[in-house]
Length: 88
Image 1 (cartoon, rainbow, N blue to C red):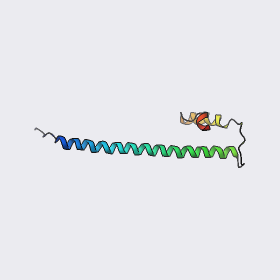
Image 2: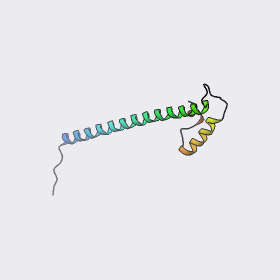
Image 3: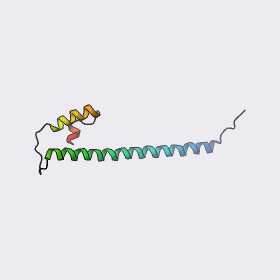
């Protein structure tokens, strides 16, 4: 049994449409991930500030909080929680 060859123009349009859908999906995924990471990092920063300030107007600096957090978060979640990243 011999199959008919697909119409090249229609086939190319099919590929083009699928490619557009995949590119849009990848873009949406990247945007969602970036937004989620910004919100997550904002909350992490908020919790750190609240912990450091302990209800006071200003935090008492000089503690090893960020160093300890960096060590513990890196052990639990891997890269991305360096002292410098937490400081920023």
